[in-house]
Length: 438
Image (cartoon, rainbow, N blue to C red; front, side):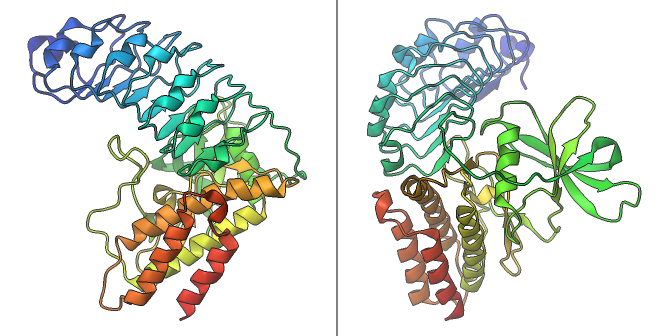
């Protein structure tokens, strides 16, 4: 985090990123002295209600974050910034999104946890649009012009007021990651059995193991014997970037147990601050994250270690295990919604893996088989992205060109721009099983 003193002294001249969180009520004029280089402007956690009318003087600006500020509308001046691609106004008080506030080069719009009830139709006229974060608003519908958003890949719509899905949504050629939980869609499902509870006062907390968009994860044991190690996920707040904690719990209940899934063994009770949490199996230390989350530049694509190289047999083992997990979820009427390498923990030595983080999961309408297939086809595309990425990191003397070509063919089938032409997960599972056994 930078300081006003640094900014005003000229010490930040030439910087590409500026992070200021110091109770600002207006943008310091010294920011414009960075106009030749500034690309990322982070003003989150201040008291801003407006941005200066001449913001476009920051001619190289690509990214702006203004989360946790009391804005009531998305500033129209954003639309005058020709190079602006990422706009983040999470947890403000935004109720109005003017069409003129949408930059022409918009790729990624974050309006999570606001009061937006309507989006302008011009949103569908932004040809570069790839990612929409809209969970925790008051949306009752989506503009039909989004049917034109042929590059849209990720959309978070959980915890809104949608009563039905537009037919074009599941037909978008590149839509891959979708979250819908917490909307009054009228979908019917059989009840799921509750999971056990564990009281906060019976837990012994260990070190923090990691952090995701929705919560912090700690090592934990259950007193008094403390004979078994677990992981405890404590949610950060009521609304996450993916949705609400109670929807994640509901998805976990429906998913049940599977060797390649990290689903909870108990729900946290009795936290002194009322913080919700889940007690999860502790993943072995032999497992590591397959990749890191997307960057500002990659937008929807995970960042893999540059030196990652896996033998073909490891790729096939990894892909088969994940296909088994996703096929299990689909049989249980669950769409994971966030099938990404950064949510996969794997053992590089043998290729076994565990899929985690159900924060974006959706319980599917089990009484509507056609809609279930349409929604599952989105997840098949996510699996295709994963296969394609893993193939790019395959190497070794045992690599078989024919097998590699078949994996690529499977990936391309999953990535078909016509969702109805993509294979079902059970079919992918069968084909991968054949490749592993060949």
